[in-house]
Image 1 (cartoon, rainbow, N blue to C red):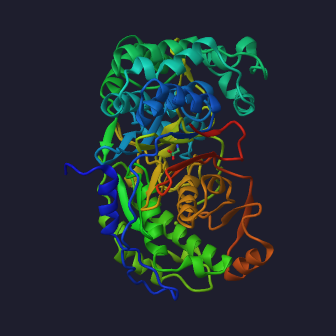
Image 2: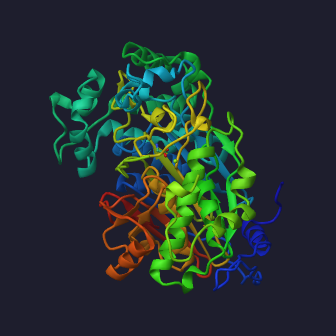
Image 3: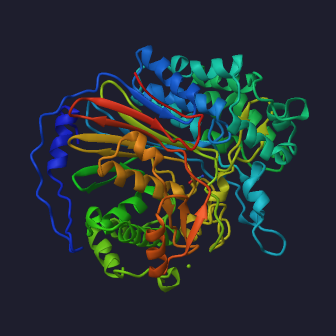
Length: 574
Ligand code: GLY
């Protein structure tokens, strides 16, 4: 469909076709669409929220050079690769949800890693058949073929306005001239020191002189600067062919991995159609498979549309949200994988009728034990993965969630490239029905196959309304899905960007059958009511690193906010 209308007008017409369904007593009913107020067409200024102030500033630097939100996203992502390598980077992958103001189109970019063609599931098993967690999480066997460089090249060339030499310049400069690592990076390096010590190029990069870098000292990464420079000059070929590809393959194979030059040459970032769902007069635009996030968020919202959450006491509100989370994560485990490899019942999972059926199974005052729903264990919401949100002066919006998977990925650096490899292979169901590092289970749909993308929880999402819109996302493994869901609900409740990122969180993922609770999310009376309903509340350290930009169309005000749980982030409007 080619749109001739201006994006805002188109947006309003789309919104007019949707009707949210609510009823105070829980019975679904359709609310009439209301006539929209006249809208301004562009904010006239920009907002960026990311996990590191150097990355946020890199985005503004590129906007000042005439770039749009997508050029800024290239600058933010590549700078995060340098200054926040514990979370994402050049050796990892990302997922992006874009709104293009000029056409009104929403686009999804899948720059997720792929399994190398020679993947062998037996490599992830110990001799006694138990999962080999080290092979899944450390060293070259744990790494998928990176998607980040190809994804950023696609983003710049198809959606940006500037050449890569401009949008990658801040990252190249920061890597070459150096920067002062923030406490979180210093802590991550110290935590992973034993693993980093296993590979000489990792020691050379992260443990100069055999020790973690010291606070306040300038830290440089000339190899990574050179690799970004090759990408700036040659596009994809700067990473996936030639000198860099050869160095990557040589390093991986010398350390026991199985990548080939063909694996790299065959990698493609893909454009996919995002999942969109109407909820309470807002259009939610979110991540399709190979992310499980959008399907789960849509399924949860479809269940919740049958309840009037605003009229409920806090315990019942939490109860219905937890039960919807439980059911969506059950389906996540059973059905989802790479759409290019598996047939998934998406029509069913996204259908309001399916949600109606699931809603019927929820009791008014009682938790449903997960064992009663026709499937394991520990979970760490962690410090890995990163998300940033951007809205530019023209109303382009982009949310990118990017990852090397666990803290500092595989901890393996390929000699001479500055590329820290991801450990994304653990996101496959390497051993069916055995939990990965996030406690997530998986079925055959997410089994490792050469060229296949591993399932992700990354859920960069846009919430587009008549009066207000937002870009929302967060890191946090399986908790990404529930954080984004809670962020969407809070935004729709009218909260500001600052409130949304600061809100206390809860999380349920079917198994373990426990509600993870951040201190202060429920008061004592609500906690007691939930326990009486049958919930096990499990206190957890604060999780997530949400970065949100909101846009109020009525006065064209932008707000950008970074999660107060981590001081290195910066949300800024200029
Ligand atoms: N590696 C975490 C995710 O993609 O969900």
